[in-house]
Structures are given as structure tokens and as C-alpha cells.
Image (cartoon, rainbow, N blue to C red; front, side, top):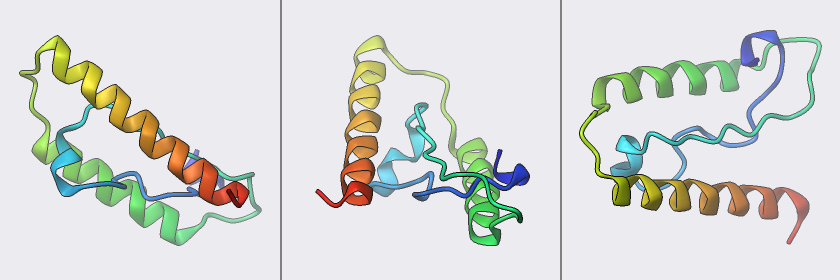
Length: 85
């Protein structure tokens, strides 16, 4: 969608660098624009490559639940900051 003109509202790798191994990444997009946002494009491509290089397949179910909670918390913080709370 970034390639179609939807800019990102937050960097996909928001949070602590140790979260690079988090398999959950909520992407928050703004309304479609008439042109591609080059910053968003750079973010998405760089993030995709970093995640591919760092991805680990071995995780236990407790880790997955923790990663989901962390991802949701980061999502809420971005949404709160965008709505002025």
C-alpha cells in the first residue's frame, strides 16, 4: 500500500531495537495521497530487509503472546499521539 500512495504514520520498527525479532508488526497508514511518500517507502523497504535478516523461527507460545502485547501497546501509543491525547 505504501507503493500505492498510502504513507506510514510511524516507522515499522518503532520500539526497542531488541524488538526486531518481534514477528508482529502493525503498520499504521494515513489516507492515500496522489504521490508515493519517499520517507515511508524508505522505512518499509529498510524495515523489511532488517526483519528478513534478523528473523528467528524458534519461539515459544509465551513469547508470541508477549510480542503481541508489545505490538498492541506500540500501536496504541502511536494512535494516541496522532489524536492528541
